[in-house]
Length: 103
Image (cartoon, rainbow, N blue to C red; front, side):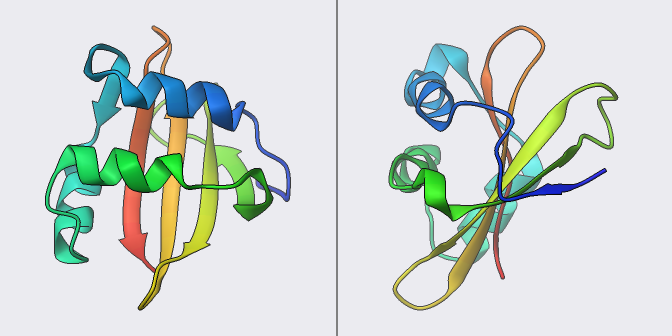
């Protein structure tokens, strides 16, 4: 079930986890999506996530592939388009970028 306007995870904690390559997971899909919209590296993706604001939360939703986990979706503006960035905290505690696509 989707919940709009409220995040499950603390955005600052997710940012901190993603900032460290040891506590960062970036899915293959999100990597492909990011490259297609001009983010050349994982570091570029993380740098963009670091700019997210709590007020940009769109919704939180059940994880389709990981029952019991939630995923927070942010919609944010880039200079030429809007981004849909889906984040999660993994069972082992890593920060995860699930999706990173143009809206």
